[in-house]
Image (spheres, rainbow, N blue to C red):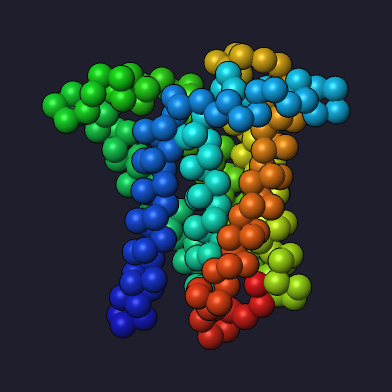
Length: 214
């Protein structure tokens, strides 16, 4: 019983952070990122501005949280945190879709949550991406320290991008190849930035006994 309560204690902070980042991403879903609008990549127009929003940026915070959780507590807590956050968010979606959410939620939020194609695309792709990230991080953690936090978001991000644009289909402008390539380039850039943040936090967030390495 004591071990179970300790596990729940480990679970609370990452679950709260995952829910907070997901909610922030939803609230910023319509704020476009125009920074990349004038760039090109190997001849391909690198213009995700029509579909890439600040909400997508918050998704990378989810990867950061699971990597730091995995570093500190291992894969079991990271998996459980993703599952707990997913369950809480699913309850919010169910309330918005089938409950009396109009009492406390603006109409535009309810309409966005009612877009089942996009909700399914985001939820499944992010969930799969995070799970792949956790598995890869746990498999390759160790020396050198950067291997796990570099490879895990790349593999997880690739799975997320491929699944997201496959499920979203024609709901977003552009061809599948264009969206996947430009989105994955963003994943690579975000992974490098997260690696810098991860390194800065390594001395603060130390692994528990038995979880050495990355």
